[in-house]
Length: 463
Ligand code: NAI
Image 1 (cartoon, rainbow, N blue to C red):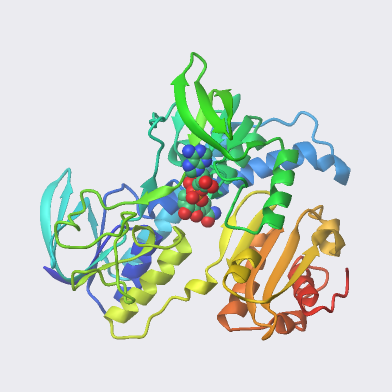
Image 2 (image 1 turned 90 degrees about the vertical axis):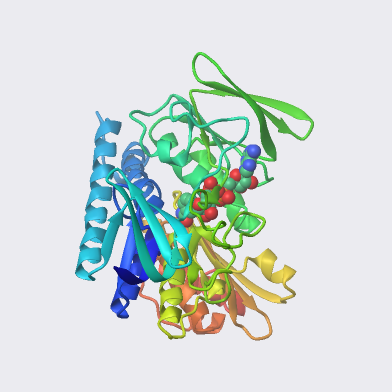
């Protein structure tokens, strides 16, 4: 049987591509080696971590914040096993949803490990044997996997990857987290809220370095208040096993830092999945970081073979992969699909959450913009204070001459949702004044972003 398109990998990039392709009338197959569809995001990434973040936030909130609302939570206890069961249920439910979408759209699901055997051929190996599928086009959506450190081999017991850290049976007494990026801060938060003594070691001088410094400094203070400890400007150099776990030797300037813990979570980034794929053998070129190179239409150096998502350059984010998937397939169907790389939101789901879109203030200046920046502290937002969410700030970065919004950053409860307004504004090329003059319901947290826009235009009302 010959397909119009074979998609390899059924993460958010791959399954979205398959759906869009089927909608556009392409006869489509999707090859997946995992037991369930959904890839890293659904099975061991975005969704399970959010389930655990929700459970742990409830527990932490009951312990620390209920009292201020006049609610007693005497006798409070937690059951990590039950939290994990709930998380597994969430994942199962969402995986069933993807199965439904594959069936609804008439997509042929092929279970097994896909390998490109030629420009129009995918070989699929499973327990049932091997089969060869033919297609006019192949889309590589194989995603990424955790990158480790040479001195710390993952063992799933003491040296954990993010895959392991969303599946622990109980809260460890202590954990060192290496890397203060999205994974380190999110999973470090989960376990700290559940009682683990968490120490974060970060190579760079600050955490979450993709955000502006005023935002990350405020975030760090809030996380420290929750019990997380930080060693910044510190690189882990060697490690040894101890009876109770692991001992790490790290370097901080000229100083040596020795850290011991029951578990260590290595969260120092991810790398593209191209091994065993047969792509390089088929002539597909990779860049120096091992990502698949594509042209502006997501076609690789081999005509008819395309690639999207974590396996190509750019931020490793599910929503970036989805957008590329839709655009790449639309291009295949002769439509003008495109992705606005300047307006991709980015979120770290700590408490409070931190979210950004577009240029940072530092980045805008580095790009030669004269900026007009507005900052608004949520301490002055009625809904935030009433809800006990007054920590944090909203920031709007605009071009001074044109007023056009270049970026926004939000540190607050629900920042992941609030950032959507700034993303849409940027998508439409809007100005800080347009945001400031848009009516926002009162009282809402969304007024915080509006007030930051007011501040950027020099016409603050509430600060
Ligand atoms: P990351 O690249 O975001 O952060 C890794 C951090 O580790 C960096 O700050 C780096 O300086 C530090 N580091 C590297 N080597 C080190 C060493 N030897 N010692 C100390 N620190 C070291 O990577 P992360 O957090 O592992 O996430 C991987 C990918 O997954 C990222 O692209 C991220 O955007 C994505 N992701 C996104 C999420 C979200 O959108 N909420 C959640 C989880 C992951």
